[in-house]
Image (cartoon, rainbow, N blue to C red; front, side, top):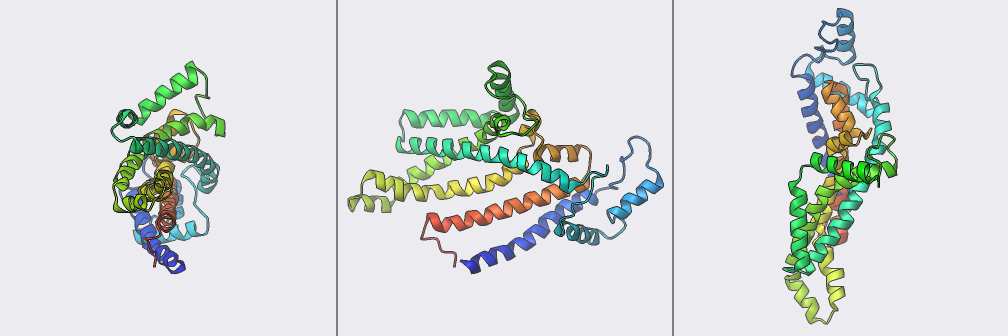
Length: 306
């Protein structure tokens, strides 16, 4: 197991450098990053020279990139073009987006798996049809429509939950977290249902029944555990998607998180903030990928990491 973890960590190194270099090259090699910094008027030569020196823009692109990654490795994420410390911004916004992602993950995991199990055990019945129709409706609705309707109905009209989450408390983030997790909840319900139905017809289930195991133990211990492997994979990778893909939801509910910061950085063409944020998101993806691979062995002993 230790050898497997070391091998996976070594495999992550070229992925981190390859992905972050592509982002860095797209941000800094497609035009002059100092253009447009001073509005419609051209920037003063002294200001442009300071920016070029600060971001090593006169060096070859590869040298710029490795100097930048060297700063990242020491915890120095640099400053925005306006002089705001990027590391401090990420440190303040990261916990808020983590809270949002945790709420979304709980919603999609608990409700999605429960709905998928009920539909799978009642294949062809009313519950199966109800889950199919409801998940199809959820998948068909764009997230900005779903978020706006939820904000209007539950936040403004009924006043059950706060319509905005400016302070980023758990209570304020409950409604945007439910909205964020709803789409993935529909996918998890379908994935769980199909995986469970497939495993219920497998040979090892028939063998378990022939050995006299109870239906509860056959389904709860053997079938469900194997059926959750693709679901765990989806949930693991979805955490990375939630961290970076919450842009629309955070904009609707005015959440001061990473998604809103990415939106602001793109709209102001702040390359330093974009590259720093994306680098962190790449690390989150890779760490979650490693955790998911390690969980495989716990869920299915037939899978070996050697």
